[in-house]
Image 1 (cartoon, rainbow, N blue to C red):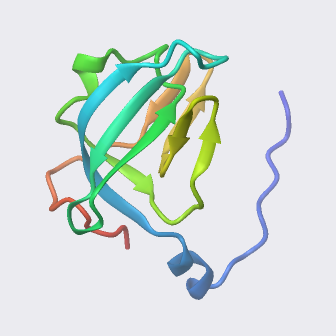
Image 2 (cartoon, rainbow, N blue to C red):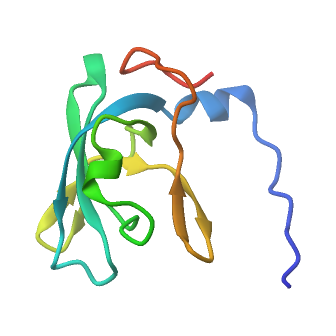
Length: 116
């Protein structure tokens, strides 16, 4: 078992730079070109619009498990080219031995609500 290192402290201003917002999954498609099992995921972030990403969550989630669920995404990273697909946000989650467990919202909030 490896030892966990506590990251260095950050300021509130550092935290505020990361735009973590709520969004609702609107569509999920296969991503056969991905090196590791992944889905193409589209999310409605309300006033921030609909954004898409590639997410390595296919081990634990089927498309029908995801559509309509609210997730937490980071929407202010630069876009990233993943094979033939352009990823526009980071779907947050927790890596486990069984796969990535996505960060979901316990009660509905308006799409685009920022984590505070």
